[in-house]
Image 1 (cartoon, rainbow, N blue to C red):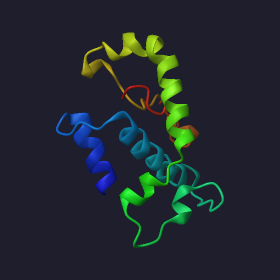
Image 2: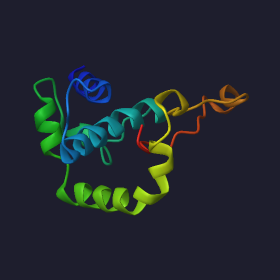
Image 3: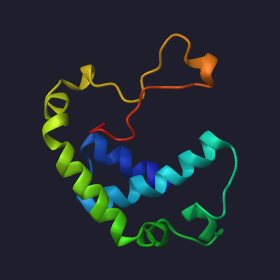
Image 4: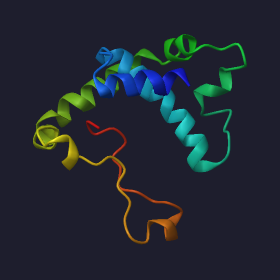
Length: 118
């Protein structure tokens, strides 16, 4: 999938995405994750309801509302000081979506914080 390829390339340093493009990609990815986690496709609350076999990734990311970009930028700004110590940790000490004993008892629950600089 092109979306994951772009995000992985960004995380590996092979591609540098701007903040708005990264936000758009992550926002679209969140709709895929919602379908995976819930197991139901809600046409009313899912951006992917607008998609069909001809829909491109560029079209999906362009459909992300401007207020989403503004809201997430504001949240990231507010969280900057809080997450700064975590971002300074070496890569091997940062774990995204860790699972714990008993996670499978709760349907695969994890401790991710969505993005949190991962």
